[in-house]
Image (cartoon, rainbow, N blue to C red; front, side, top):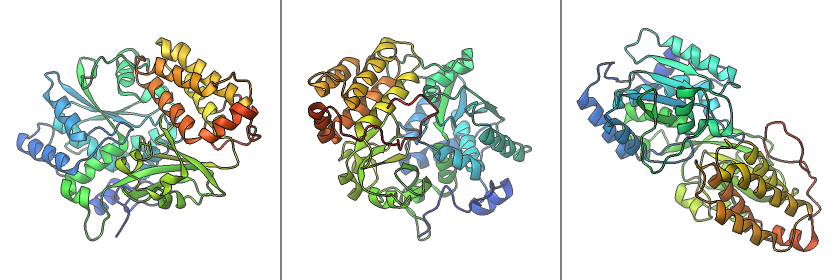
Length: 421
């Protein structure tokens, strides 16, 4: 079986042109700008059959999300989220660099389903290369009977990719998350209800529109079942983006990047994700397979932690970076996250008080669910998983003050910052 679906036919040195894209995937059936209800009903049914969930981290059923937005009385607008705010993720940028038309195909399908007047592709202001490649792809499609597409460049911050932050950017030019009292609830900007979907999600919709939901979920003689993009980094010799069949063992996926030395743990889903122990390597990389180990797939990020570094120090680095990346709009972000980061740093460096792990857990209980957005909860999830997976290391730090590996070189991909240790 061919393991490639999203990256099928790509040239490792250049983007697929529109002509090359159609040669690989075939033409796309779209209803045109005026829409077609019979087409929309059939397409939504195929999305339901597929079981596609969002690839930006939330893993919410795409068909349900589309149907909800389409049911709103306001006019719709389609937003492609190509912000990729997670520092350890490169999958959306790779997809945009080599198969941009598959993303745009899916965006056109989704726009037609909600009756959107146009499509906005959001790319961080520090990602000029991808913006240029997507501009070229949009120019390639001029003359087609499609909804107009344009690119917006919000500031490249972790929280800027959250869908209400994008709505805030459209309205006021500031990428700050808004409080949502309940979900589902519509995301509104400029008087229009937004359908915000990740670039990989859109690309999968482009495949489903051609081949149907059953093909997408089960595969055929030449294609594997449902695939997903994974960015692997950390203690590996060949970091990068890999397309894998969902359900492949985590160990086989990690092996693609050639891990070096012993593995102390794996961070799944991103810096707001979860640590899992090496026991998870034998389990299928799937929502249920990773949930059995307390993990989640999140944004398709796998960070391999080598046994030669201190996992408490690495967790502290993430916590401090996440605290600095908050929107600073509410108490949990302004005061709670810096305090949490400080407590983990103290534990890592031997400056902690007695029962440091209990104090950290108490703090996570106080902060959980109190943020205006989900940013604090992501940090809480990551910290709690570290205290569980690295319990032996925590005990060593509590009783011996330090493990002797605190100053080791970090495996984490973080923007330039002052070294903590």
